[in-house]
Image 1 (cartoon, rainbow, N blue to C red):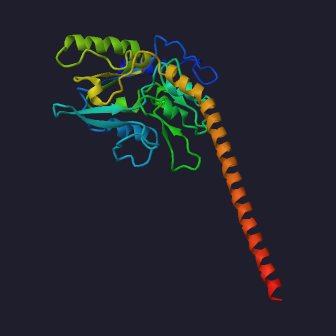
Image 2 (image 1 turned 180 degrees about the vertical axis):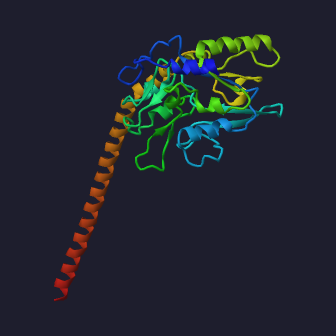
Image 3 (image 1 turned 90 degrees about the vertical axis):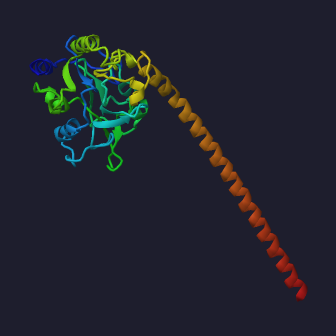
Length: 295
């Protein structure tokens, strides 16, 4: 824990990636992360509840069952094909090349060289592009707020700023969560796999997926069986940017179609109105003619 606190105390650095400067900063030697050993997780929810307290959320005594504006982390229960139950802590993965940062058009999200992907509510316009871009489904939108904004884990940036470890790490009673420098965590994870080949699958999830994440996992079963997306090693922003580049064209096509439909319906209504007036005029003329004949 002393090493983790030391890692937290070294979190300083001005450069970060944002919409204004979309290229992610080089990962520093002291960039931090969290190693999650799923073989130690018992599903006690201590981490998720501590997250609520640290972020001043309501219903602090109620374990969350998914991401929301009130819960940035939760423990997912997965049953594998052999009938065994596994618990998986979910939170923002703090990607090394985050798609959410690439997708944000106003710089509300940025990747810091120290590891965390942080969020500035003062810049957010609620467009939700980050939601569409994230391969892990992390950012959530506050639908019940008239000024709805995005909510996500920020790796307890307020705690890191004063040299403390993330609340979830501090709360885990089983040692399933370990905070420290990412490179050191990777070395430790490899050593655990090598010394316990029967306990872990030979993969560290987050080492290479989507070009790497700050949150790393060890597991006793393949990660695809636990609901983890099977991502390649390319940064997700490469795919997100391709989608974003098509957005103006799609928007223009939709706008053009809407305009054409409006003109079509307007013309149809105009013709229908003209036809009705013609019929009414013809009927009135016939009535006048009959009245003249009777006289």
